[in-house]
Image (cartoon, one colour):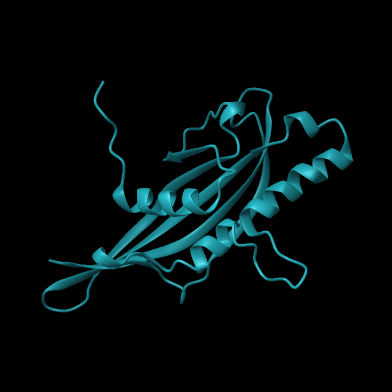
Length: 165
C-alpha cells in the first residue's frame, strides 16, 4: 500500500503539541472518524482552508486555518452524572487547563500553541496571534465508534508563512 500524504505543516503542529503533552496517545492527520478507545485521548489535525496572497514581487503569503481536535473517551463515565463531569473537566484540562490564578497550565494545548509561536523559524512557519484562536466543545454519540460517547474540543488557529514564488 502506498504511504499516505502527510502535510508537513500539520506534522509540525502535531509534533509541537505531542512534545509538550504526554497524555495524548495518538495523533491523526485528517479526521479518521473511528478511533479505538486505546488511542484516546487522540489529537486530530486538519486544514480548514488555505489562502495564498501576493506579499511582494517575489513572495506569496500563505494563511492556513487549522483545526486541532482533541477527542477524549467518556464511555466509562456515561452512567453517572458526576463521572460525566469528570470526563468533561478532563477535556477542558487537556485543552486549556488553568491554574488557580487563571494562568494556563504548561502542558495544555492552548499554552503550548500560544507560547511556541515560531513553529518552524527556518521555514518562517508561525502561528498568527493577531487572529482569534477559538475553541469549541461538544459531545458526540456514535461518531467515533458505534454506540460510543466521546467529548471533543476543537481549537482553530491561523498558521502563516511566506514562500518564494
